[in-house]
Image 1 (spheres, rainbow, N blue to C red):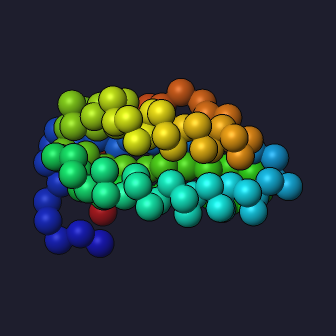
Image 2 (cartoon, helix red, strand yellow; image 1 turned 90 degrees about the horizontal axis):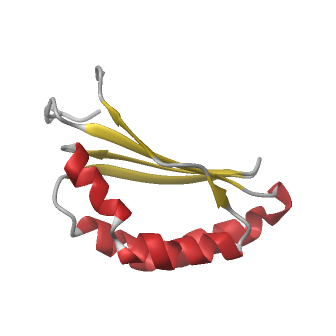
Length: 109
């Protein structure tokens, strides 16, 4: 649990994808490759509160991040390492994404 207050303008950005569960090892390998260049790039972006990447052997992948504002979250839509490099690697591993949504935070524990 965070001890720092989350700004009232904060948003949760959720990106979800699906893949054939038989390709889970390939998706895990892709995730490891992506982390090597995406983590440093994301850490440079202002307004980041936290970022989480998770994949399930059941055939789904999710990226959940918390940003100080919608404007900060939208940086991900322009980040080359994400929209070009990571997307190409995940799509090669068979991941198909659904539209990304930014959610204003209603409350936090």
